[in-house]
Length: 387
Image (cartoon, rainbow, N blue to C red; front, side, top):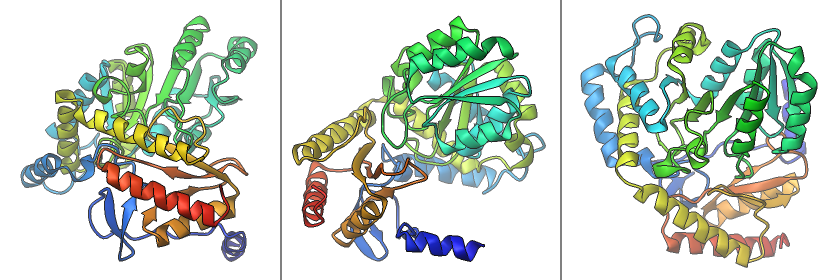
């Protein structure tokens, strides 16, 4: 069975293996033994190799050791984990927060815990795979609304709200494949109107949008008005893990019923210490987010001026639309041969015939690096008759 499935991937020319990086995640890195410009990482702010985060992690290693030793609800709950939760809640301007082993685990753990039979989940059709899987694990019914279509969302609420005990509206804050934003103000308004709960996956908004990178909810001025705000600690924050920002009551409940809290060891204390330092850096200065946006806006303009279709991105995520799956993969391979590493995103990650390269400029890049990458992308695209 697996042999046949693997053969089909190869026959369709969409099979790929992950490259091997030798060294830290920087603007340029050694990939498969070759120096390349990195346009594929989520290390938006450069925190993954920031010296102050490394210093904090090393200090925590000496104090706490390399692992927590147990799940959080037994003996894996250290002072550094409690400090981290408080720091996240303070930064996000929410009542409380709870960390998970990853953003994926946060979505799986929270969604299945807060809804049950007799409830309804209403989800945007382009929500992240971890949301989709979390919805599947729950016992609630589900309904899908057209991407960012508030009329369709209200139609579902009108038709179905009265049939269910609780309704949970779930959306990405920033949609990871296109870089566009959810219409959070309207979602919150509709939720209040129809007495529904709200859940925002802010994996790509935390550290990027809002004051000092406080996220999509802060960007729209909705602090305290979204019931569950999920974020990752592995993208802009640069380390590992995920979290949910919520009410204190919800946090207490999730400590007891969020299955990753009960059945998976807590994140490493050294990681927790590095994450705390990352939030301290964000609180102290907006230089990191400003540099990210300056580079992103610059890079997008250079590519648009060359005639590329970058979709409807409103964030540093830069989708270069190719459409054909096999062509996108071949484009990515040729770019790597020429010194630029990009990610080809194809079905089923995105709908069929919407394949693209997802380009990720960061605060680490120089304008010279971005110009060089844009020139290589343009020349290879011309050679392949993509533009």
